[in-house]
Amino acid sequence: MISPGGIIGVLGNGQLGRMFALAAARLGYRVWCYGPEVDSPAGRVCARDFAAPYEDLDRVRDFARQVSAVTLEFENIPVETVSAVAEIAPLRPGELPLYIAQHRRREKEFLNSHGIPVAPFRVVHSLDELTTAAQELGLPCILKSAGFGYDGKGQARITAPEQIAAAWETVNVTECVLEGWIDFTREISVLVARDAHGAAVTWDPFENRHVGGILDLSICPASIPDELQQQARQLAVRVAESLELVGLLCVEMFVTRGNELIVNEMAPRPHNSGHLTIEGCVTSQFEQQARITAGLPLGSTALRQPTAMVNLLGERWEGGEPNWSAALALPGVSLHLYGKEEPRRGRKMGHLTALGVTAEQAAKLALEARERLKLR
Ligand code: AMP
Image (cartoon, rainbow, N blue to C red):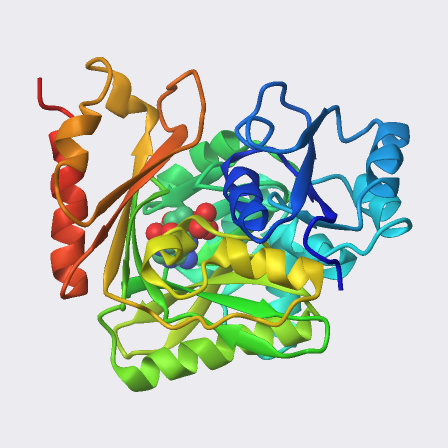
């Protein structure tokens, strides 16, 4: 166990690292971050900021030697960097979950081989292979780059045969995964926390709405039957166990019309849909990450109150500085800003959380708060 006062390292210096550092600091830890960005969201709140490239392995080792354990907030960290850290300090999560989650083909094959339901898929390396695969899977289908991808980037939907060539051009990589279309009624995600002894807990599933491939709204509890919630939680734990994961895992799933669960993707780190656990749950995803990394017992994941979260993307700044006072005047609304200076379109700048009597009411309040940001 790392006693409070000890130093915990985090790889990655975005908003997830920032919120992790704030939660760990509350438990008395000092957090040092390592990542390529200078004056980053995490760097601005960490006790020490190693702003250096992941490829600078001497610097990476220097960082790892001075901290008691390392966690991460970003899974697409080069394998060499991850290995260099793991040789020196306990790394949570370890190398296997990272290796699998970094790559869509590996992720799909891993889940499939462990009997976890995923969308029907084919791995394709050329336009010819894509054409054949599209015939096999049927249209519509969705082409995704096999390597680094997030927030719907590197994807193209194919609804008619004449779109196949254009989709190949759009995604423009040498290896892709073509997925059959899932006619889902809802998208949910389940967060699992698993400690070094193999004990695992899950939060209530979150129900998620995406706009343009980016998460827009999450609510908890999800509007799905209790039995399905239990199934989703069990499925997520199975994935975490298969990965021998120590840390957090977020498993995103589709709920089909027939109430079947299909795993879409997973991330071995805190997740955007779990931000509502900060206000909504007894233990937030970030505090849980700190507990696991430090070797403390897992905290209760119980939901205190129905909660909703809406993201604030860069476009919210287009009409000038958002009206924070108008949003925060609503009781039950909390604001999180990530300390990013440049509000680019599609860039996650912050989020709003709202508590309600029901999830629906919380969602209404969160959306109203976001609308109020436009008031002049
Ligand atoms: P991803 O980057 O894989 O999470 O995809 C982004 C979003 O695209 C998902 O949240 C879904 O809304 C949609 N999507 C992805 N894959 C499929 C699929 N096989 N069938 C239907 N919708 C999908």
